[in-house]
Length: 453
Image (cartoon, rainbow, N blue to C red; front, side, top):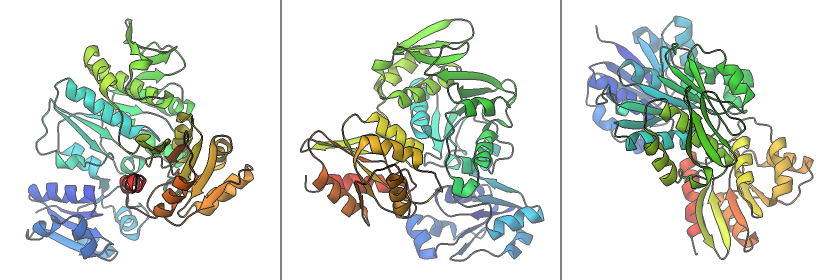
């Protein structure tokens, strides 16, 4: 009897899972509360799947729990909460609920290097991917970074590698997933609207190593007490990275010099000044990548070559341009307060900050304490605009403009900015109140900045 899988969410990962399962001769029911028109506009290939008798769709409504009598397994997309009725019913009825990461892991023998943390995931994942590509090994840079793993499972070979950015949402729905190497970059409050507490959020992140064995590797931030405490629960061997101290097993940076100790000897890697990405936060990302790559057998000369050439990722402290003496920086990936604090600390010029967006129930007090010292004008918009204004006022900061959209925000910023100043988009919030993702938000910002220049 053919297995039937209910796939909830028809975005990138849900569509990729559906295609993979159909290619294996399994039956799929794909559902999404968005209308058929919207789903097909985003993923027109679904029309081709609908010709397959094993494929069924339910769009525009919440699928009824009654369908579970015909379902062997439920696969949910990362953005789908575990609390919606159909998922709760599946748990209650004992129908397995997993995610795309778990499906991919089951169907491949290709090893995984998985990177999680609150901030720096995309930069570290991309950098590590470039290092492995330069080593000559077949490499897939996938996961939360925007490219579903299941797109590549059918063709990936055992001697290749998946370099995988993995979010807390994705980790909630793993079962047997066991990365050969796991990396935890840092842990600060984020996504508390979904996880409800910091304890739950940290618990979800910790699932990255729950299936690891003693021979697997866990790379931890030695400067983050919460990461170290969490990692202490793992049975896998542990390596560390640090910006503050030399280590017995791992990589560190002190006085502008980067070293790594492989447990036998200390090896000089390079000067911090030659890194293609700048700022202490990016040095930490590089240290994590160095540790994971070195202990996976990549030659040091390959690692150093990529460290020098890699210039970072789009939407993360991305230099947009300098117009009329004003620098514009796109940090749309700054989707939580800690990321925006990092961005503010990375800019030395007077700042006009564009912030606000979807409410993830964060505390803005630490951010606004820094804003009051570093920011000339704060331009706020989105669902959190009033919360940001309140938090800023509580820190004595009053130079605030509230706007309705990015067209208005950029226009105000252009009018306000003077030569030698920086206009920084770093929202400290997700984009979901205005845009489907931070990439679209960042590109809109860049287009508006370039307009009429």
